[in-house]
Amino acid sequence: MVVRLVTRTQGEVTGRAWWGLCLLLVIPWAGRTLAAPLMVKVFDAEGWKPVACRVYLTSAQGEAFTVVSDSPEGSAVVYDVQRGRSAEVHTTVSAHPFRVELPQAEYRLQLERGKEYVPLEVELEHKANSTHLTMSLERWIHMGRRGWYSGDTHVHRDLEDLPNLIMAEDLNVALPLTSWVTELNETPMRSSRLRSEDLPSPRVIHVDDDHVIWPINTEYEIFTVNQARHTLGAVFVLNHKEPIDLQAHPVRAVAREARRQGALLDLDKHNWPWSMMLLPTMEVDLFELTNNHLWRTEFLFKNWYPEYFPSYLELPFDGGSYSEESWIHWGFANYYALLNCGFDLMPSGGTASGVHPVPLGFGRVYVHTGTSFSYQRWMQGLERGNSFVTTGPMLDIRFNGQLPGARFRSTRGGAIQVQGVAEWWRPLSRVEIVVNGDVVKTLRPSGEASSESAIPFSTDVKVGATSWIAVRCFGKTASGRIRFAHSAPVRIDVGHRPLTPRREEVIYLMERVSNELERHRGVLPGEALLEYEEALEFYQSKLGEVR
Image 1 (cartoon, rainbow, N blue to C red):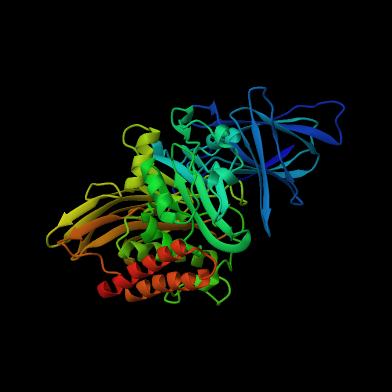
Image 2 (image 1 turned 90 degrees about the vertical axis):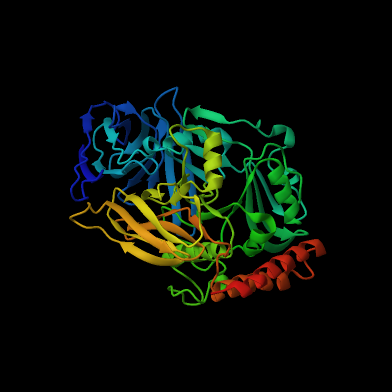
């Protein structure tokens, strides 16, 4: 057998040599000529302990293969989902050896584990009757040692598979949506695949000390009204303790019940038809800044509600479709407009893995929990915004020594020190400091100050009026795909003056709600229409505050 290393940790990143160990042992096995077993053991290079991971295996012709565990104590979960040209076929395996019977040919084997390990990719010429492969995955960063722990707030995987998945993805918190309603006039319990008596107990499921599952979460994703197609959108109730037996409208009643149960409300995507109504009506807590249209595989949704694309954004848009870059920056701009309107809205990250062709935790949110991890502290930090979201790079930042989500008060304004580092195992292109939606400082790699894969920074940002500040960073994959991280904002209250949105932002939000109000007349009940009218009045009131 011949093995060629394609991608090995950070070998391509200047100034770092993370060459791991890859031991190959070819063992003849008589009697097998057409197909032969490939058996693989995977270790963490730090401490050389067996480690769970995600496995991709493809032939030279592009045919995908899945694997099985080679241990009676092990597990392997196959994922095979395709949407259009985007296909995600992989197996998540526990920290045990795995195997597959393969015809003798050339293959590409890829191993990944969440965001903190560097992907490993090898090409192998499988000619032996039996091949044993021992491989090591290198961790390029350990965010837990800095107090940061990751989670996915939009999960559609089966509960029984999640222990395997969160270990293979090194995902600390999973929030599976075990109740799911799609019809306006139904309740989650009446439309759920689970009966109320079958719902899991309201307790944390510990896979180990810092990998956990909270099993009771609900999605309202409304596609039909009175069994007729009429799309509204999606919002999540996370971390509730009892079944919710409420219809989606009036949404204010759902919000009240969520608060009673100590749950958080998470906005799925910015361009769902009803999304801009939900913010002032439900007082939503979270905004999925890394959402389920961002995948490892090809970006697909290029014309999903393009009529809502903001005309004031100077981004590639031909009137009928948009790029992945435009989609990302549309989400940023929508988030910034809502922050400028005064919403205390913190970022979240979700994938809808189980529905879309994307691995669990591909986009995720990191929350700082202090010197140790607990689910309760993680949820509290998520609500406070002690967080950042990412599709690849990492951020570790402070604002005047405080975590993201902090709030400062000042009578006259002044300077806020923004200090930290952006890091990735691939080169980073830039770090941007954003104030009230404007990029005020751009920091790029410097050969004198940092390697390409780390951009440390320490700078002062002056504010003279009530403002918010956030940090974001960008890099690209070898194929040119954008990967980013974005912090939660800090807010600086100066005197008693409110934040001042831009006129174009307020007009955009007003038009979104106004258009939906008209579309719903004669379809939604009067109480639901009233919520749209009240949301429209809220945005109209912001016209008197614009800059």
